[in-house]
Length: 166
Image (tube, rainbow, N blue to C red; front, top):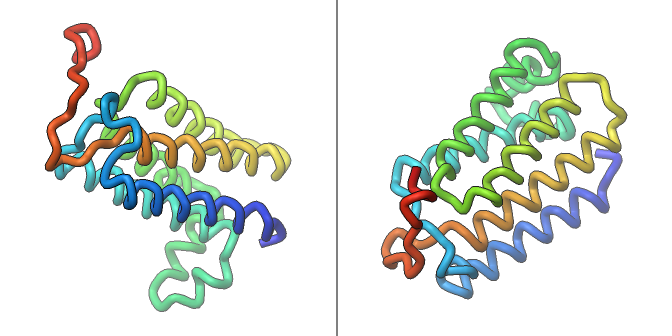
């Protein structure tokens, strides 16, 4: 945790984004937003929580290890072996599958940043490069969840064309 300003700033942005989303009562760009089916929403939430755990195990090890029952999983993540790879790539794919109906350019940005984070984590790169990719991932995922994920109780105004449905 040698980057308190980075982590504090990202946490603040995520909280601000959640507040804006809550106050706007739905996606900020409602005409482009798509509602998620319950299983899609579950995939994104579970994938996100697992990626947060993975990141927390790497950067905030002592805090994660202090939670009863999490130390063995966190230790496996920190080894950066096969278990760590599965613990990263499986939730990353779950998020992409859950958001697969989101406007494709935004989904592509999230996918590229997920690959960037994974590559800079499992291939030796300087920490700063990994943190830049991680910041880009958090900001792109925040943007998708704020702007492009609609409320399932409200009908979407924008309907995808036949080409976008495939």
